[in-house]
Image (cartoon, rainbow, N blue to C red):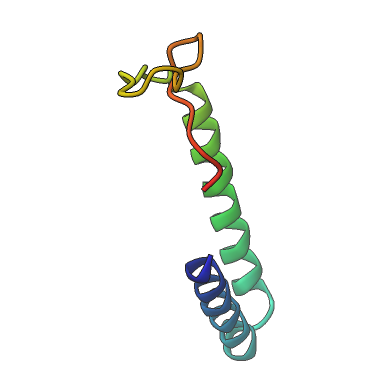
Length: 72
């Protein structure tokens, strides 16, 4: 979680500095492009077929053959 906070803060500083020095269009286009890449990678990941994982513990496998993981 700390990594998310630090990376978001760094991105915010970068976008603010771009806004101060380059105008409004540059940070807007950078933000749009990174969001578009995130969307693209999510679509690609959704298209990939999951690979079943062999379970080491009884009862830790979903009936579909996929391993169930904990919340953390």
